[in-house]
Image (cartoon, rainbow, N blue to C red; front, top):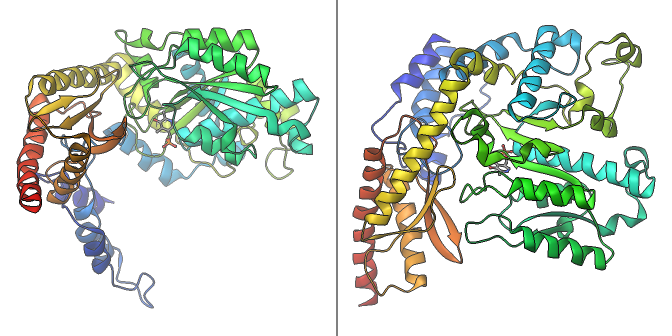
Length: 474
Ligand SMILES: *Cc1c(COP(=O)(O)O)cnc(C)c1O
């Protein structure tokens, strides 16, 4: 264990990435994975250090800013050691006695954090994908029960299933469509609503969509609001969405995988106003709560909604146990064997308190604002959005007169080149069909100097790319 810690510390480097390519890496792993005789743990760890750790991206590096991949905090790493070494499994009380009770306590605290009523409940999940899936599963099955008298858990989908619809904004995460597929509804069951110029769902467009679905005899059973879209961190007007959901009597799910951590902050929590009216909330701890992957939760406004997936297995949670009050978490989860991931946010909450954790989140929002100003002031960069959270989207546009195609090509090439150069890891995305770059500034230890260094790396690399392009066209 100590050797592993040393190996991690040894690999901390000046740059966030070695720049290794897929083919270069493939050549490194030519030893047999399953040798007849093992090499011993020390040697095996050294091999991993040399080949894997040295060629890993370092999400703790201040110029590692591509994705919602956070620098994991030390309390979370300590919790990982504790929960893995003791290997508690949350699928039955007798495999995880204290862990079961603690997960329930953490879920209660999260319900409180999001101002959900006391009847709220929830469960830890692998992340936003699973939380969104499970929320839509429960929403679908409640709707089918109430609308068609259909018990989907036992009878499968009703004949009317083709009419079922999920409504979300056009900037919502792809997992809404993925969930619709997995739920047997098909991705086309997801109807997207236009966003405004800050990429938030437009409530008037939502009204039009709901009325149109009604006229067409469709059956919308859930509205999904996003609190923190992947590209822009935009937060839908949740209170207005909650109103529409109540009006049309459909489930209101909030995908707060990215933005949920604002609830920790005195300064920014009101940006989530309306989340307290959600039927369900997806929140990820492996993003802005700085916990190691994987760690998420699904919260439900009403614990009773878990009944749509109730299950008893004689060997895990016989009905007699329910009657005797033995906690039964397996029936709340889409997993069976399940990690004690709740320990990670628990240790972080206890160690740092809401105030300090909230402060970390706040510092990243402030850095994103400063980074946006820096980009806006620079002649050779074009700022695409005023950051709603800590994602800053921009383009490198070194001179006038470049058409959108040339800008796209230049930015795409620059992003690849600096990745393989290893100096900075930035994301690419498409905004109105133009390739753009994105900094996701999750790291609370990063500074504006770090951002400036990343921009400098983009400039240097961009100017060589430009020269090459000019030579090619000349
Ligand atoms: C990250 C993210 C997801 C997917 O969650 P995973 O934790 O990767 O499974 C879904 N929705 C949003 C808005 C996200 O940011």
